[in-house]
Every structure is written in C-alpha cells, then in structure tokens.
Image (cartoon, rainbow over the protein chains, first blue to last red):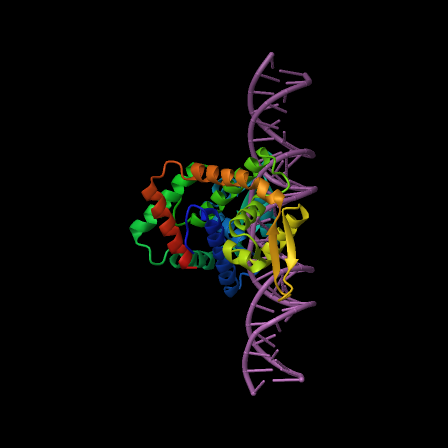
Length: 142
Length: 142
DNA sequence: ATATAATAGTTTTGTACCAAACTATTATAT
DNA sequence: ATATAATAGTTTGGTACAAAACTATTATAT
C-alpha cells in the first residue's frame, strides 16, 4: 500500500486491522479461543505488573475506562482474573490474574514476538527507531 | 505517547481514534451533522472520481465491501448519493453524487487539510517522506 | 446447452472501541 | 458537620469496521 498524506489515516486503519486478524488466527492456533486479541493485550499487561486496579490498566493501555470495564468482565467470566473491591477505599477494584492466566502467558508472549518480527521485517534497527520516533512525534500533536 | 516495539499497535489505534474524534468535531462545527467521518471519506473519494461502482470504492478505500455497502446506504438515505443498477450488467451498482454532496465538498476538503496540518505539525518534509515510506514498507509485510 | 465458476453486492453476526451520563464512595472546603 | 468536588468504575448507546454465508447475475468450459 502506497502511503501518502492523503491516505495516512486509512493506512493506519488497515495495518491495525491486519494485525488484529493475525493475532486472532495465531491465538486460535494455540487454542486460546475464549479470548480475543484485545483481551490478550490486557492479560499480557497484567502479568508484568501483578495486581493492579482498573484505572492502572486504563492508563497503561490508552483505552477508555468503559472499554476496560468490558474487557475485565469478559476476562473474569472466562476465569483469567479475579476482581476484588478494596476494603480501605471501596471505589477501587483490584484485578488479580489467575493460574489460567499464567498458563497462557508464554503463548501470548510468543505470538506478540512473532507479530513484531513479521511487521518489522526488512527494516533495519535504525529504521525502526526512526519509525517509532516519528510516530511518537505525531502522537504528541493530538 | 512514547512509542516502541511493544506498543506500536496500540499507538496506531490511539492515533486513529484521536483523528476520528477530531474529524467528527470539525464536521459538526461545519454543520455536517448527518454523516460521520467515514462517510465523509467515501464522499470525498466520489467527488474525485465521478460515477463509480461499489467495488471501485472498496478498492480505493481498502475497506471490506460489506463495510462499503453500509456506508453507501447511509449516504443514500441522507441524500448524498443515488444508487443505480447497471442495465447492461445487472450485478453492478453505480453511485452518483448529488448536489448536496457537491455542496459539502469544500468543507470536507478543508477539514481534511486542517487535520493533516495538525497531525504532521513539527515534521519536516523529509521526515514526512520518511514516515510515509516506512509505513508503506510495514504495510507490505501484512 | 447447461452445469460450474466467477463476480457484485447484501445480510448477519461479531469485535473493538469511545463518549456521556450514571452510581458509589471518599476527599475538601467552609 | 455537611454541601460540594473529585475519583473509580459501570451502563447505555453509538461508530467503524470485518468475515462468512448468502443472492443475483453473468461468464466459461465442455
């Protein structure tokens, strides 16, 4: 896809969509069929941080809290996490990963690695750095 | 937003989302309230091409035909286009922009320009070229 | 000529989000 | 002490998309 000023937004859209489709198919191959890529992302985050609350995830993921509420509820329903109200400050909900969650981590990490290898194939380290820098820069404009 | 290999996908997501929000707010300021940004995109395309069929739009937009069917139907409902079956080959549906569509074009063009100025603010021409080239390159990997 | 394949577009179903308005709880300000 | 602010999370309603299975029509292959 030839990208230029006039189709930049739609290029982003397309790349994003392709990556999600890839993640979904890889997860299905690894028999992770009860969660979708966006749940996998949050799960992956949780594992690195241990117990966190919903706002922490919101901040880390750059997604709206209402989105995260939905993701967390699905993860709980499928046994990947446990929700617990804080007894000191009952506004907070803490999220604890379960054993099931720990079990899928290696596969998720693997899929994430494969996705990146595929996405950045043919780019030098320098080009990757440049790309990340430029994307950071435009993200600051918004 | 500091972008790196580990959050590239979510950075794209975020940028995309911010741009859509911007488009929506600008369209509303220009009193284009009966269509959303993704309709605006298709309308903008139509104007440059004259009469086209649904598949042409699918190809130009890199979106699924089922998505385009929906967009086109909404545009018709709001009086921006007219759908016409080809009488030679009755599989084809031709899309014709109406006067109403022509009237909003200048505003749409303007909004699109403003969005780009904002998005790429602070980038040199060279940096923009680099960005487009790198994004093209990764899109080829998918 | 007729069964099969290809093509254009539609319908159905589902994911990934967000914004605004809401509830519940805790902090603060006078 | 109590009204008001702020904060954490939830609910409701909506947009932007895609994939798969479908209908209708035309092309092709034997």
